[in-house]
Image (cartoon, rainbow, N blue to C red; front, side):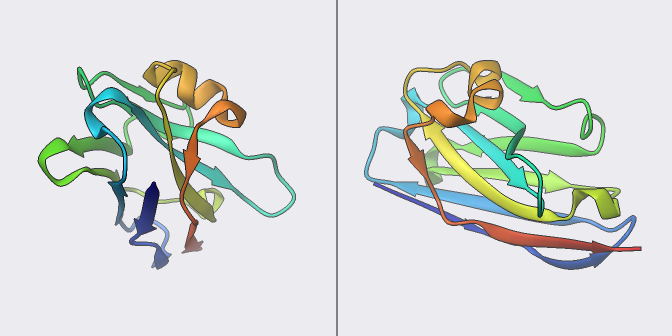
Length: 126
């Protein structure tokens, strides 16, 4: 099982980035896939999660209207389009998968996720 996150980088406030999470080694269609982030000194938090079986999505209040999560089941890949980025979005972003949780539950209970990828750093300068 592998989750490979990519797409992070340095961007100015107001800019955009698209993160990708490529999955392999499990039945992608039956999972909730989520994006989580952890800033220095802060707890990891759920940013946005998607149920790949029905496309239902969840967003943290802090990113609603700015971030969009999507899934390409044919490519076993989940994307996070991040627009109008703010300095407070700076963090290491991780993708993770759960065979048990719904999209909301996955974002609410990051500690229960089955698989984690390595993070990708997003830095937003002011």
